Amino acid sequence: MTDARTETPAATPSATAPTAPDAPRGAPRDVPDRRRGRFALDAGDAARVATFAALLAALGLPGSIALFGNAVPVTLQTLGVMLAGAILGAWRGSLAVATFLALAAAGLPVLAGGRGGLGAFVGPSAGYLVGFLAGAAVVGLLVDRLRRVTFAPVLLACVVGGIAVVYAVGIPVQALGTGVPLPTTAQLSLAFLPGDLLKALAAAAITVGVVRAYPAARPVGRTSRAAADGRPAS
Image 1 (cartoon, rainbow, N blue to C red):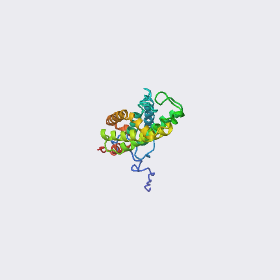
Image 2: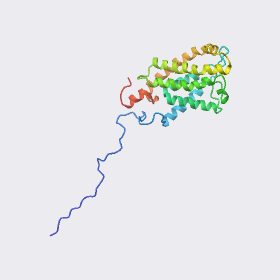
Image 3: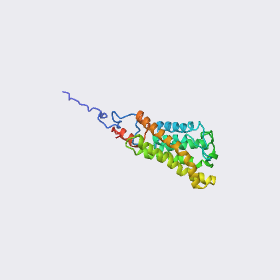
Image 4: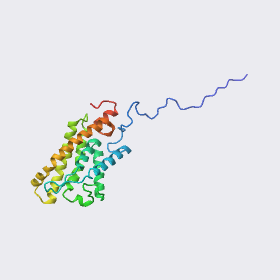
């Protein structure tokens, strides 16, 4: 008589072993991973930053106009500052402006009228260039806090950040550099206001249009967080 022999099968990995969690089904692929740090940049972010730095340079190609003897000319580049903050958000918008300013400091002719070099940062316009950086950050911070990107709130953000903040930095530095009294410099700077208000209107309209057509263009703020959760932004 022979005994029945049984063999214990070799242990195999369980088919139900836990695996790395996948992205939720139906989640939009172009929404950034919310686990990334606030200041992290992916390839898409880097491309957006570079694009807006180039846009700022392109807006300087038409040149500049000096009004009423003001030492600081009128340019279109403030429009680019507003758009960078409103569309890219505070961090990425500021980074786009900083990239543009770094190119100017390196000597590339990216400032209005084909100017460039460190000399631009010690002249009458120096404060406005620094104000560009602060202005983009403030515009981005204000727009990031909106539940919905609509015209009136974005316009207000552009006026506060793209005009008031830029003036608050630029006018005192201009007065200090030119030796003109601050009240006189501020009065001369009022010549910029009508054009800057038109730029704010244009920036608000463009931002709302871009966000409606391509929501992933704004990879920060409440709008994108709501999209990542699968919820409506409103």
